[in-house]
Length: 361
Ligand code: AKB
Image (cartoon, rainbow, N blue to C red; front, side):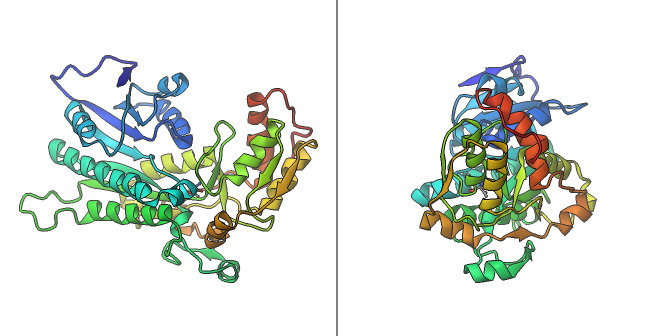
C-alpha cells in the first residue's frame, strides 16, 4: 500500500529519490522532518515502514509505502519506479526484543540490511552513480566481558572490544562489515563489476532520548522511559541498578550527527563507522534530575538480571575523536542542558496535565 503527497512517477522517467526505511520509528520521525526541510533538495523522499505512517510523519515525505524490508518484490518495485540516490536504513529490531527472537532479529537486521545494500548497488549500476547509504549502528556492537573491565575501559574507541553479547549487537556489527564490503569490494571477481557502488557511512549511536516519541524494544530505554513516565504522572520501576552507566544523547543530536556525516565530503572521511558521544549519566543521575523536575515522581529500582547484563557489557563512554576531527561532530548537550533546554520544555507540551516544577535542572 502507498500514499503520495506529490504525483506518482509517470513511468517515462524515474524521479531521483531518497529512501528512508523504518520511517515510522523513533529516529525516522526526526530524520524525515530534517530531510524534508533541507534547502535545495533535488530528490523526492520515500518513506518505508511495516506499519502505516501517522499523518504527521507522512507530511514529511513525498510517497510512503507500507511493507517489509525483507520483501524482495517491493524493493524491486521501488528500484523500477525511482532512481534512488540515498538510503537511510533505519529499520531494525532492537536489543531487548532481539533476545526474545534472535533468529527473527537476524533475518530483519542482517537480511534486511543485505537487501538494502543490494538495492543500493543495483541502483548504482542502473544510473551509473554511487548511492549514499546511512546505517545507524549502535554501542551494542561493543561487549565488555565484565563490570570490572567496563569500569576500567575508559573511552572505548571504534576498534576496541567489538565482541557483542546480544544478537542485535552482532547484527549491527555484521551490517557495518557488509556496508564496508559493498562500498569497497562488492563482486570483486565479476568482469562487469563497478567499483565503489555504495558510499556507506555509519554512526554507532548511544541510547537516544526523544521528547517526542517513546522507544520500544531497546535496553537503553530506561532513560527515556523514566522521564516520560514522570511527565505523564506514572510511577516508574527502573530495570537496571542505579549505578548503571552508558552513553546517551538527545534525538536532535542524533539527527544533527546523521545530517553532518551524510553531507561531509567523502575525501575527509577516513573510516566508514564512527562513535559519537554526548553525555554518560548513571541511571541514578537520570532519577535525580527527574525527581528535581517532577517532585511527585515515583521512581524505584528493580534490576532485571538479563537486561542488566546487557547494559554491563556496553561501555561507559566512547571515544569520538575521529567524528570530531573528520566531519565536525560536536555534542550540543550535557545531561543537565538536555533536561533544561530540550526535554522539559518539549515534554510539558506532550503531557500538559503534569507541569514540571523547575524548568532548569
Ligand atoms: C537499544 O537499547 O537496543 C538501542 C541501542 C543502544 O542501540 N537503543
